[in-house]
Image (cartoon, rainbow, N blue to C red; front, side, top):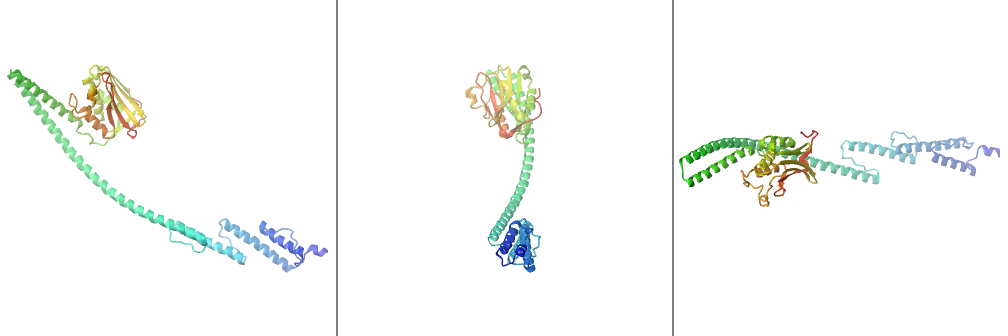
Length: 382
């Protein structure tokens, strides 16, 4: 009985249970159990130890593969070990193929891993299609860029030709305006001499009308000098406060009127001639306001952008005149001031309207789109 406790024979039920338990513990724990009572038969004891060691080695090999370590070697032989080695070999080759794909070789395909191969190959096919589509798009973009480059070059040539033509037209306009002024001076001189030679009141009235007509022509010719450069230069960010003050300084009669400029430090993207817009508004007040004692510039932000508001406390504009206010030729002077002001503002999408109450003064609202104004860090000038 004492010998049976120290070493159970292989055919013993208790010994068989112990062997099975040892194998089960090894499989579950990943290590050979300590204090194992082994059969006194040396060959059986050695074989059992080899089996348990192979189980542990196989488990460690499988665990390394599961963690992505494909560098381990497995000395165990047999069907299970062979399957794990085959899996390791396949994963090594798959890793190499993935590296090739990452380097741009989209010809790689997998044919040894069943359903995984189908999914892997479908992914590579999708990448290959994307590569083809990307190359097509890149070719298309290169063609578009080349076409745009040609168009830009052609546009530059056209712009250069237009600038040259405009320069010549401006020069011709200046010369023509100078010649017309000289002829008008001569004409008015002859009209004046004629009045001293003629006593017929009817003829004198005609001469007076002729002189007034020549005077109006002179004003119109002089007026065109300021607007021959509309749209010639590219729009820029304009300091509105500075432009208003410059326009104000050109009209000495404003010294008798209280001019209030309630504007934040703001710039507006506009044609450089926007200064003439403010000049025209001020001059119109002096010409037609009759009883003006104050003028006010204000700035408001709105849901659609911003507004620069010009107001005075003069006689205002009648409802009949409001309908034609910005039409070419309408007005008591040249009839061009407000018409051209609207054209200058329209170059960069600004608009103008009059909303004043007749008898209480004018109110001109200049509407500015959201992307056409911005505040500066400078403080308003006093």
